[in-house]
Amino acid sequence: MKPILLQGHERSITQIKYNREGDLLFSVAKDTVANVWYSVNGERLGTYNGHTGAVWCVDCDWDTKNVLTGSADNSCRLWDCETGKQLALLHTNSAVRTCGFDFSGNIIMFSTDKQMGYQCFLNFFDLRDPQQIEDNQPYLSIPCSEHKITSAVWGPLGEFVIAGHENGEFNQFSAKSGEILKKAKEHTKQINDIQTSVDLTMFISASKDNTAKLFDSTSLDHIKTFKTERPVNSAAISPIMDHVVMGGGQEAMEVTTTSTRIGKFEARFFHAAYEEEFGRVKGHFGPINCVAFHPDGKSYSSGGEDGYVRIHYFDPQYFDFELEA
Image 1 (tube, rainbow, N blue to C red):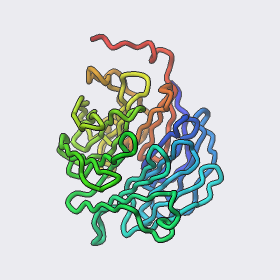
Image 2 (spheres, rainbow, N blue to C red; image 1 turned 90 degrees about the vertical axis):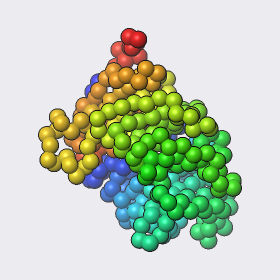
Image 3 (cartoon, one colour; image 1 turned 135 degrees about the vertical axis):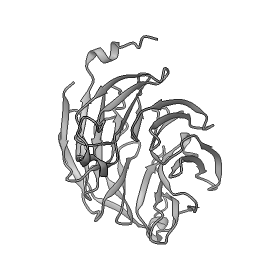
C-alpha cells in the first residue's frame, strides 16, 4: 500500500474532507490556506485564499458547489468550489471551531470558541436569505455557556446538530428551535472529532480519553467502544466494510521528547462489530490529526501534525479480509 503524499501546507493539518463523490479532497491546516486536491492522483486543484489565521474546519456541500471554512481569524467564509471566489464572509467574536452544511446545502452551522470573554455559540445561517449574510445575523444562535463545543456534525435530514463538548458529553441541538433534544455522556474527556457513517444513521466519536465510540445518531445510544493507549484525535467509519480507522498519538507538545516508535503515530484499523484491532498503517512523523474514508471505501486519507496529507489506496487483500471470530 503505497501512499500518495500531498505537500500543500506548512503547518499541521487540522481537518480533511472528501466531497460526496470522493473525486476531491479538501484539506485545511494552521497556515491560513485551504487546499483542494484530486483524490485519484494527489494533484492540487487549487487553494482558497483569504483567511488570516489558522483554519480549523472545512466542509463541502452535497453537489460540490460551495465550500465552507472556519478559522481562528474570527471568521467563517463561504467559497465557490470551482473558482475559489469568496462568496460570503461571516465575522464572529471568537475563533470558529467547527462548521458544516446540512444535507440540502442551504443551511450552514458553525460553532465559535469560548475565549477572550466571549462564550461559545452555535450559529445557524440560511444561505437562501442574503439578508442574514449581509447583516451577519444568524436565524438561530444557541449559547453554550458551560462547556464549549469541540466538534459538531449535522444529524440525518438536517433536523439537528450533534455536538461534542470539551467535558466529553454530546448534545443534540434542534436546528429549528435551538433546544436540546437529547444528551449523552459516555466519554470522560474532550471529544476531538465526530464523523457520521455514509447513511448518517451512526456516528463515531474520537476522544482524549483514549477511546473512540460508535453511537446511534437519533437516539444517541452507545453501540461500540474501541480502546487504545493514546488520545484519539480522529476516527472514521468505512462506507463499505465493518471497519473503523482511528488516528491519534500523544499530544503534539510531548512529541519531541520521545522516539517516533513510542509515539504511536500509526493509523489503526478496528473491526466495527468485534471491536478488535486488525491492522496498522505507519507513515506520519507526528500525531495524526484527522482521518477520512473515501466515499467508495477503496481508500482512506490521513492528515498529520507534520503538515502532510497521505492518501492510501487499499490493496486487493484488504477487501477479501475476514476477521476470525
